[in-house]
Length: 310
Image (cartoon, rainbow, N blue to C red; front, side, top):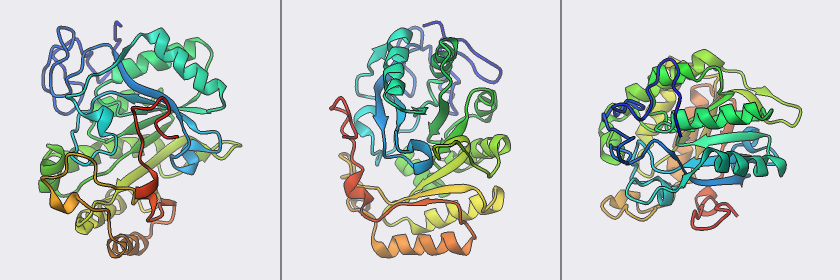
């Protein structure tokens, strides 16, 4: 595909600066660089997903577009089958991708969520532009790890309806050890601050109860890392607002590859979760969702299946 660019972004055919890695890869020549991605549309799965937050999935589910590979390589990634940069990246044409999305929308989904899009911004834009050209206007959800350039987020103001970022770390050492990104706290905060500038604290809902505009910040609690979680919550409250919508997640389970990190070989403990919940309440957060402790046993997608979440 010929990826078009907008203000604040460069096409992947250039010396790539699509994400904060700024690794300078010539993605038109070969799938290289940190994310080992080319400049085509590399999608691992397009599927109906009913397991997101109620305001995202609703009763009908959302059409999630899972891009292959990722600009973070978190050792604990729950989508490791498709996010690791050393696995093959399936490639689709623009027509194939849009047709697959149309089929899910025809099944009742009201929105399209782009998952791990940070290294695939021109491709995402091309898909959205084609949907619009066909007269389709689903709610566009930007489901990101938040390791994004502020300029990129600013350039998306005209097409993204709902931002759904992770906020993983305020601990630099932990960010480096688990995701290879020492600067994650500053980068993610700056990106989310721009999302907040665009959307504010309020979540606009349609007649069916699903979000049509807004910001929802996710945080996954990791075993043994209560202080990191508290620091993330304190930062959101101080730098943004305790009135933002949060999604506090307990769904961590040990994926393959965490053997070098014994403390990641278990789920979170009830005491750890309660301690983070107490901090959430102390800071005055009251909007959003909190997962049940059993979520780690429930949310286990299998991307070897046509329908990973069924």
